[in-house]
Length: 434
Ligand SMILES: CC(=O)N[C@H]1[C@@H](OP(=O)(O)OP(=O)(O)OC[C@H]2O[C@@H](n3ccc(=O)[nH]c3=O)[C@H](O)[C@@H]2O)O[C@H](CO)[C@@H](O)[C@@H]1O
Ligand SMILES: C=C(OP(=O)(O)O)C(=O)O
Image (cartoon, rainbow, N blue to C red; front, side, top):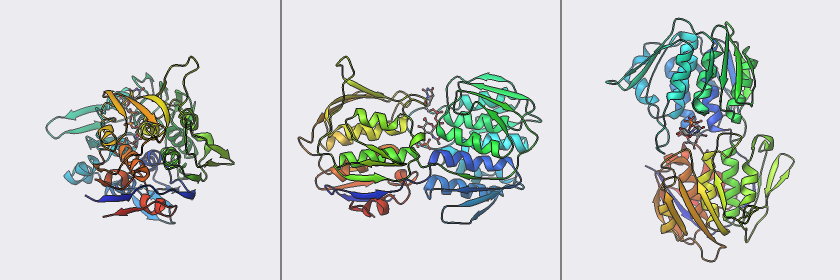
């Protein structure tokens, strides 16, 4: 397990470029299985989760070439079906949340899929009912093999239908869409997730010959087609990274320009940081954050204490609440952070409390942060990163703290943030990997 040693208290200055979006690229790579032709993907981030999925694709028999610094081509002419039953494949699936999205394309194109319980962050229960019930609606035979811990899905043919999802699951919607594009007839998915990740997937599928309407809404209609062909696709900037950098700038009182953020795809994110009192300006497609000695959390119009809560898109993504919570510790005023989706994502506040933050963890979903307007600074700590977003939040805390901090288990951060210490050190941070 690698660690970061962080010397806190240094201001950052300059420009930073967000990487391609982790949660989009995982969908896009899986979708390349839907055609025998070549698919070229640009702006692929060099992060652990993506590299693991690319390796998994290679192992499955997909021809993968790296043709540019962040460009890959994928060609799934055929798949090694025997490999899909091997222990090695199942083990690799279980280390990666994104592997669950192999099911939709595999069953649509090859009539068969088998995966083990996918990995990803341990942030509470992460059920897959939406995925499997949705794909079952299209006429597949679904079995959970309790002994082997595997999900086995087979289908002679898929048939379009109407379905109302029990929740707007992001990867669940992607999976069902990828199965439905090659089903016979019309599929209607109501209560579909509509994050930019899903929108981008649908747009790419349409360029491959799929017929999807309702993109960006929660009602998707898909007219099945017989086959799809190759295309090119560019991954959007990672909105979670953009938000992480906004939080980092505020917390370290730094002047930072976040370049080429694709502002129109950030939804409510800038607005939520503004509610924490952070000034940020849209400059073309960049976000400029001025150095701020102080920022004050707004109250609601009736004077009551601010709540920041997650909600399915276009609500606030749950993946930024850990960062917002950390940022609030140095603000003036108080805020209730309400993480509605995940049950175990707020436990990392114990580490912030050890560093001197004033936080009351009310229950697994809610924490009240009492900002002390930089009245006293956080002090360095020794901590372990429990999940990807707590990891980046702890890194931000350490960068603003007095003294030296150590963060262990930084593989959690590497899952989603490309060369984070290299990029942050280039603008003034002092982070060493050991
Ligand atoms: C690889 C990937 O893309 N991961 C993202 C994806 O995970 P993933 O697709 O696994 O997450 P889901 O959208 O399925 O749901 C996440 C959690 O929220 C709950 N839930 C979901 C929808 C809803 O309307 N109400 C509700 O409570 C679910 O029960 C689940 O516990 O979406 C999550 C929610 O944005 C993000 O945190 C993850 O970073
Ligand atoms: C929870 C996340 O990732 P995953 O779904 O891959 O665990 C995340 O990106 O914040």
